[in-house]
Figure 1 (cartoon, rainbow, N blue to C red):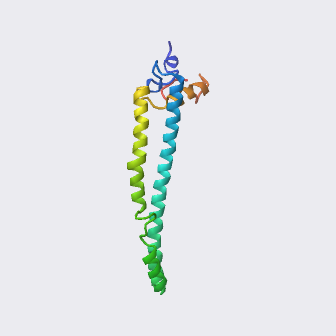
Figure 2: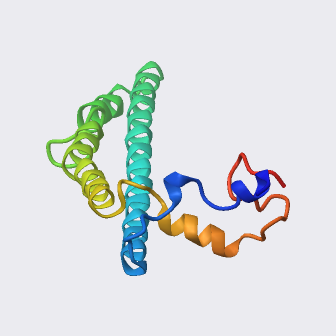
Figure 3: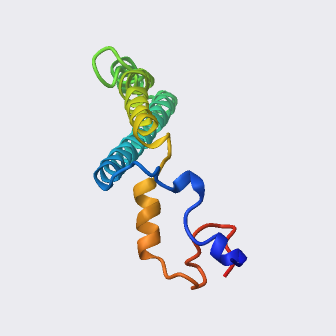
Length: 151
């Protein structure tokens, strides 16, 4: 057996355990897909947090500039009503992010990890690894099974 044959296929971390059936691999793949969507949503939520904070700081600067330009009444009104305002009842965005992380994101990650551990020896991306094997062209450059594969 030559080196390219030894490296032809997924590494051991991405090979399904012998007793694992197709339906379970598919279900775990869908669970992984769902987690990826939650990860994306979390990133968007952090983007919302950062953008809202940046807007509030710029709003404070605008208030200062309005005051300097002699528009104290409108500056005072915007300062009082908008600067530092909650984005939802009783919460700034950091509180929304923390609640999401603590009560949804971490629970979702734990559920996905628990399912992988109980059903697939903790192995990740089995569905995708098998899809890659099905779709790649063996022996073709840039279609290697893994980074250490010779072609």
